[in-house]
Amino acid sequence: MRLTKLTLSADPDLVKEAKKLAEKEGTSLSSMFARFLRAVLKGRRKKAPVGPMTMKATGLVKLPVGKSDRELLGEALSEKYGPKR
Image (cartoon, rainbow, N blue to C red; front, side, top):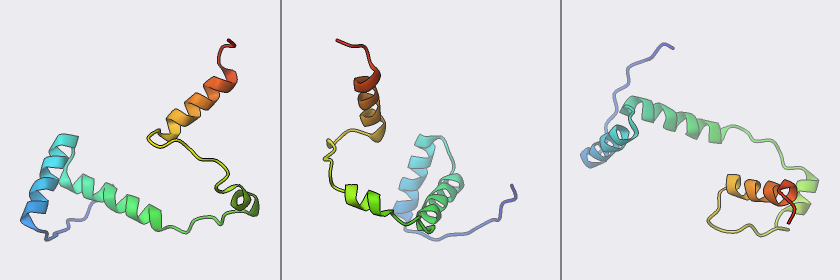
């Protein structure tokens, strides 16, 4: 992939913290900035409209706080297909 050099200006304290974070994550500021921009741009893409059935189902279930989607799915699958007690 071809890259273009970009010069940015930011608060020195912010740059210092960003450099620490990049080092901790084992990446560069350039790479971290590129990932940030991709995430922001992806979020702005037009999303598919929500269908009427989904709208009716919205709010029917209260999910527990503090559990990831992956954990909730794992528990549901385990409950449905796990060993019978």
